[in-house]
Length: 283
Image 1 (cartoon, rainbow, N blue to C red):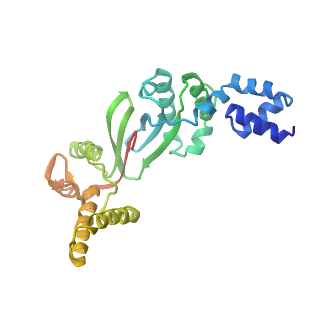
Image 2 (tube, helix red, strand yellow):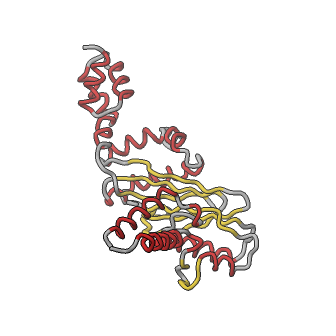
Image 3 (cartoon, rainbow, N blue to C red):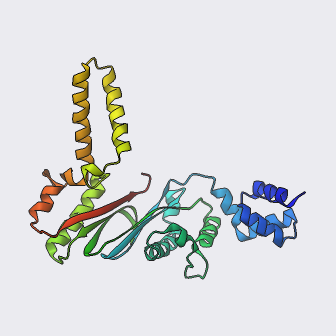
């Protein structure tokens, strides 16, 4: 049997990756059984098989300060594992490293953790120990000059570990209670209202096209004249944009006002919303 055939067979039997199988075969002198044992001892075979399963639970972890703040999503298979002490300990350290790496996942995977082992290898070991698929998901960092970050956590599991987290970046040099309150309330508003863009003109055209198609399909069998149907579509799309853009959403704390009205009412000329992130497990 050729070396490449041995690697293929070992991959099939263990679920481990090509690189790990190749290394194990070299270490075992080409003995398939010994190579499989090496992978089992290292936890790689067990972990790799877990990766074929679905991981829809998990946590979002926040780290940083008002100048630089990051979110990272870590998924697992069950909510029970999301509350496991070993899992929580791992994601909390991972979050700090993610902030240092400015959410560069490739760099993060190779970063050395406190136990002198890389993130990637620690993840494999954790999967082997806990017995569930665990993956690193979405990550984002907010950092801008002359700006301050504000955050809100919902369904907190422990400290900076939650099911839903929002960060909003405000462009301002103000250090006042007025700005602090607005930043806190705005992050809560984003958590509740789930905007998809800051402004109407920033909504992805693909989303607008999809919504247009759905509305047109609904009107197809309504019997309405084509010109009337077109006007209805335009009206509904404009409403869709308004309801899904942060600046034109109804302010949660005062629905008669828009977010842009609240911002204007603060009468702070240098206060603007840079951007925001909203991450929720399962969305």
